[in-house]
Length: 102
Image 1 (cartoon, rainbow, N blue to C red):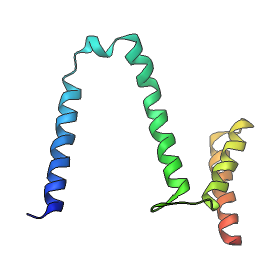
Image 2: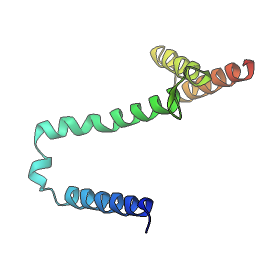
Image 3: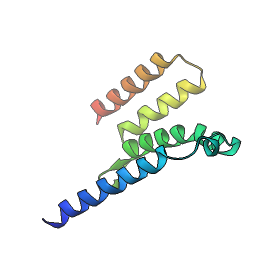
C-alpha cells in the first residue's frame, strides 16, 4: 500500500465516523434553539463558499475573469429583485460575452 491509499482509507474512515457520530446525536441536543439557528445558516454558508471558490480560484491562484462578471451580474439582478431564471440567464449571458471578448 502506498501513501495515497493510506490517506484515502484514513479519510474514508474519518468521514464514516463523523457520519456515525452525527446520526447518534440525541434529538434533545438538536432541538436546542441555538443549534436550530446555527443549522439554518450552514447550507447558505457552504453554498456561498462553493460559489466563491469556483468563481475566484484557478488551481492555486486567485483570478478575476469572466466568472466574476457573471457573479456581479447575478448580484445586480438579485438586488433588482429579478426572478431566478432571469438571474441565471443574465449571469450566464454576461459571463459568455466577457469570455468571448477575451
